Length: 375
Image 1 (tube, rainbow, N blue to C red):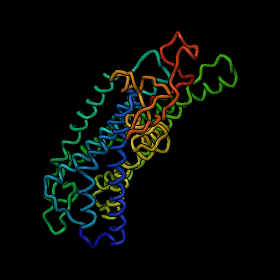
Image 2: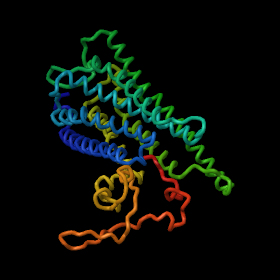
Image 3: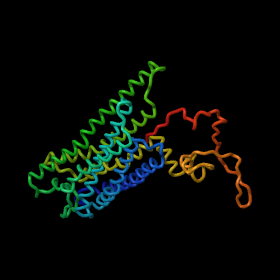
Image 4: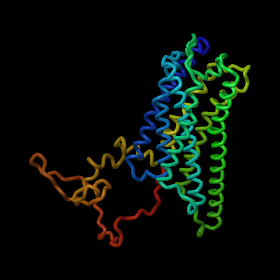
């Protein structure tokens, strides 16, 4: 696209917006992976899928967003034909993997809540599903190496050559149109319908159980509130992903379907950055809607009430390496140590005395409430 075709104010706004999206996407998704990796309590099957989503967004943020930020600011493509094709390949592949993983999450939540005894996605199954999602995504994105190229004319742009070039045959154009429609159907329409049906069924089930709880308060086995909150959060992540990508696919289908229409570059610019904004939106939604993630972030930055436990908060003695790793062990509150020739008292928490508390038959105090293991 020529520099004069996009207003200067829109170029500046899109560049600033893209830079903010890139910064939040990189830091936020790295934080998601770090929090889940540090906390064994958060390493559930659902969070394996969440980590896959984070890696998809990190890949997009590393290989796509910086190139498009420069292209947006300069209104030119300086990275050559291969990077044009590779960045578009990453764009399609990561979007496909995100949608596939979101679909797996919806199916997992569907069976976990409605049919908890008939089917369960274990950790090994989750890893296999993630691997299959990435493999299919790479296959689906591979045609980008053929359908995208760098324009060597005065506009110096990276675009779908079948939309701008008049030197291709009608057969090539037909294959290109088939590819665009196939990607739209496989990435947007079909998964969107399945995800909508699964979450609709889940919330209808939860609604019926809530009604039964009010009618039969003593015997109703209701769905835990923590699961309901997590399902809502995951549904919001899914819906926001589709909503932000709809404008880009709408413009793409419009220009493919109607040959007489030429989409203004300003609309392409806006649609592209609206779609990329989903990379920064996901960690933001986790932070807003999930208390476990907020707690994990505080622990990562040593801001919680139990910060940096291995160095400062907990003084654990007479414990093995395994026990220290899992915060197991006791210590008397009257221990003193010598520092610079003067006795100093250790500030500790109250030790857990199983016999003193009358819990001789259990090896560890059991929590009265259920803790959510989902991010």
